[in-house]
Image (cartoon, rainbow, N blue to C red; front, side, top):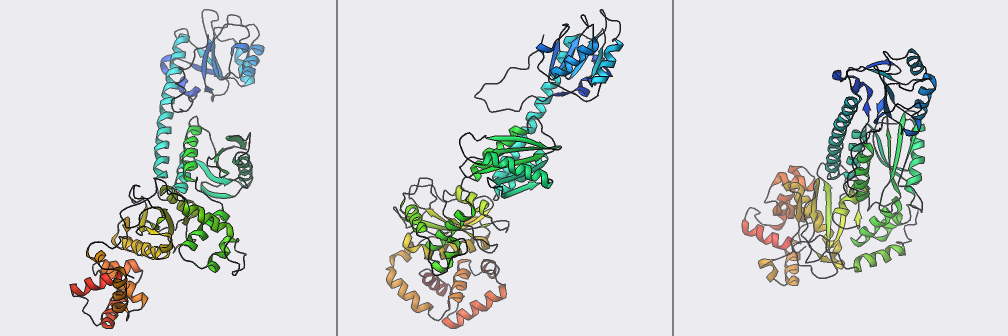
Length: 532
């Protein structure tokens, strides 16, 4: 009879990797069984153990079995072995005594000819002992595979928490599976990839396979597999309606690899949900830049794929998207914090840079936007430009918090009409955060004594007091005062040499005719600079 595998787990339980097969060599290594291979190849994988004394056990085999027999009805070894091979049996175990004193010579020759491993089972070894040993080996292999899958899941989750989650997840997946992992569009464009290179032919086959699952249409499969030579190919559709696919190319395919890939599919589906194609990303960036005060001529190339006439102005569709985005009621997950802006229509500008100094690509910026619950972002398009985001503000929302791997500078909540000024405040806040090595700085609105002075009178006083200073000198003075007169931190924040900071501050003192070491002077200047 066939000994069944362990019962399946509850359908509601998390998907576990299938039970791995047992290598024949592992069974032969169990010395207490006294098994000896006397014919056929040494490599085989066992999925089951079955005992039968039928002349033709073919109808009762599933494939992958180690068939145990004493040869009670064995009359034609060639036909018997051919039926086993046809049924997909992995190996044959022949028990000597009491029916046969030795393994029949014809059976040995037939197994050698047809490539079926043949084991001699001594009279001291019960068939049940062999079955028990196989199940024990399968349990050990399953435990090892579960531990491997668990470690892989933890590694992928850790990668997803990095500031560059999509490349990190792909790199970790390629490492876990020992191959190549790529994110492909339905058109075959490679968005991101990690791991070892594959041949051009295998890459083309992988692209075709990804195209099958990436196109969201009725009847499209969620996954597909293929092979190109000794390279195993797999493709998985990602959720989110972005027509993206995870494509894998590996040399082997372990029992738990599909489960590991499934974890990566879930993570990448979440991380790429805000992913936009190049045209949509350009339009989103153009919208943000327009809202932050950029002239239409500057954003026109983004709106028309880089071929528009600079006088043509922005795309009308961009204005409709702006109206929709800015008139919508911000959701409860919108970033917020203490500030004077309140009610619907208040927004916060955030500038962000990766802590490690690396530039942020569109996917990485999109993942940051998703974590801050906004799709209004400008990835910058260059290593020197920060990622800029617009966050809707609500007083009852959770405070804006730091994000791992990022340095953030945020403005106070402002109405849409003041987004241009808020952009400058966010830039200053980011510079302050980088100089002080803190993950988040939020520009606070005027409060306390400063809030008691009417804004018009305060602004007039500031203009008169700071009139001798140029804009760069005023910015340097403000930064220097905000960092408590630290030359080094101000240099870091402004991206200049510390001697340049000293020269500018000295020039400010001379033009203003004031002693900048005097605390009263510093306080008055700080009050004035806050009105700019």
